[in-house]
Amino acid sequence: MKPSSFQTTIENQFDYICKRAMDDERKDYMKSLSRQSKREISFSDMGDYLVNQFSVVDSYSTDFQIFTCNGFTVGVESDLLSEALRDLPDKKREIILLYYFMDMNDTEISELLKLNRSTVYRHRTSGLAFIKKFMEEQEE
Image 1 (cartoon, one colour):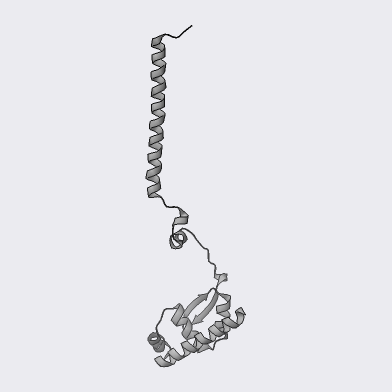
Image 2 (cartoon, one colour; image 1 turned 45 degrees about the horizontal axis):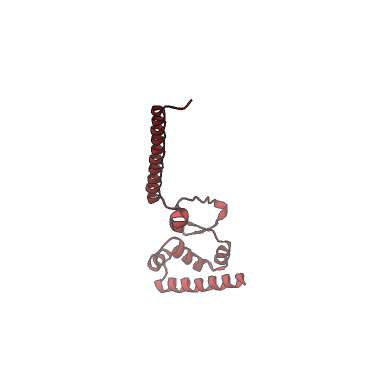
């Protein structure tokens, strides 16, 4: 049997409505993707500083070499640096640890250790020169 013109019209209208609904859904999906892409940033486009904020690194006390100076405890992670610090005389090691790890300036260190400020500066610079030389020799 041949469908009537009324039935054909209904089928064509239903076909049009279905195609229109699918097209509208596609447009909505594309708008949603566009809005989402404006809000999101790819990890490859982010700087290292931001990406590192999302990571966690566990640190254990066994990862550090512990030094104590004037009641302060300082943990040094680098084995090479801790070895160089151990080879320094006690006074120079103390000054370097206080300056670089405890963020004290020469004046504060001189008051703490009861030394002249220029003496603290001299010990610190000669200690750094020793550490630099020690580390360069170990890398060769």
